Amino acid sequence: MIARNQGGDGRVRAVHRTNERGRDKAAYIALFVFLALVATQVARLGASGLLVQLGQFEIDRWEAKSRSPDKEELKRSAQFFADSLSYVSDNPWALEAAGALDLAKMRGSRVPREALAATKSAYARIRQALIQRPTSPFLWANLALTKLYLNEIDGELRAALRHADELGPWEPTVQQTVLFVGLAVWRDLDPELRHTLVRTIERGASRNPQKMFEVVKSHRRFDLICAIRKYEVIAGSDCKNAAAASSGNALKQGQRP
Image (cartoon, rainbow, N blue to C red; front, side, top):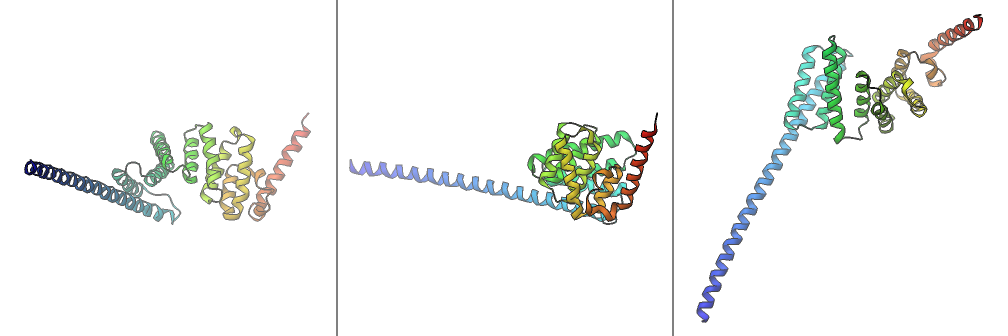
């Protein structure tokens, strides 16, 4: 009886050892597969990020010369971002860059249908990028810009202006974009958002007053800038001319029968 029991115990232990080796082997295989997947994902992310940088280098090249890109330059940059998204379809940096490039295509297009398609593409990409980067003021500013170009003056545009201002109050490009869009839709803004634009103009005087003044001047809204002392040197002559024109118009209206 004792010998048979020991033999049975030995067989049980052998089965247990076999099962344990099987579980260990399965665990090793699972770990190997997991590490391989992680390595693949890291490699894809790295390749995607590198392609974004290469595309951005192309953009920086023409922006450094303060000129608009030609078709070949746009095509080359767009290909880098498309290749990046082929590795990681929701790469927010690639989506943001591709959206900005779509806006550049829109501004350079002379075909209304092409310009509209580029703007819609920019809107879709920026919205997708915001899902992952909702705290980016640049994305919110560009979202507001695409809404303006699409002539969609609605709550989403106004919310985009607010978010851009709140998240990037001291970013020069954000300030300029918020101001440009805000002045374009001034009549559709509530008093609070109008006051936000005035504060943006005031802050902009500390970083890049010339650019801010150019935006204000393009909309002929000297009334928003002439009372700010930091703009006196830049806007002095234009403010005097605007004041004289306003006085002349008031005088003419007063002389009407």
